[in-house]
Length: 183
Ligand code: IMP
Ligand code: MG
Image (cartoon, rainbow, N blue to C red; front, top):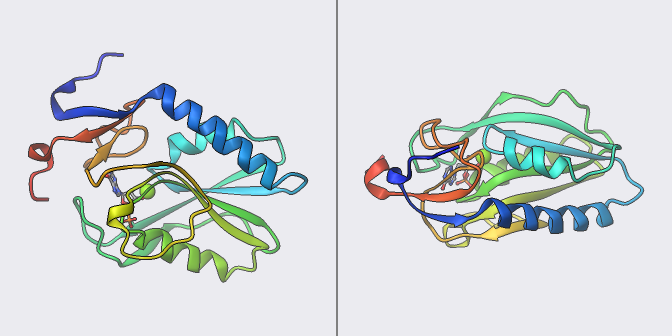
């Protein structure tokens, strides 16, 4: 598949680097949850790629469920106010839960989600994220598994979008500032 390179300046994480890192993260997760049932909770839509690739590295007693949440506001800045657009189908009582995220930027969304899921009687709730922007952390979030620490740039690809485009790129790239302007 040919991709038009004109909107993004540089590929920051290649397909191969993502696959290698997911191998390592999956090995760690399998070891940590050995002998336990695990529920992976993906956050739509950004986490679909990382969820699909991580889940395929898991044993068959690992299940998947999905949530959709929205920070109020649009464009490239999180507002801090979160609402549930689609809730889980699964009862979390006594479950080991691992939230699977594409990226932690400010941490606002995940911090809220963690608090929300922890009220549901789970045995444990942890977080795995492929990407993290450490400079942008406004909220302290305890993240158990991190793929890559990234620079503070607007990233697209591998599930990450800008206005719903670019999710289908198989790698992570930085979007050129002139594409998103001051949104
Ligand atoms: P946070 O609440 O600021 O941590 O970010 C919440 C959500 O914003 C993430 O789960 C992404 O869906 C989205 N997001 C944050 N940074 C980026 C980015 O660089 N590119 C695309 N989406 C992003
Ligand atoms: Mg997300």
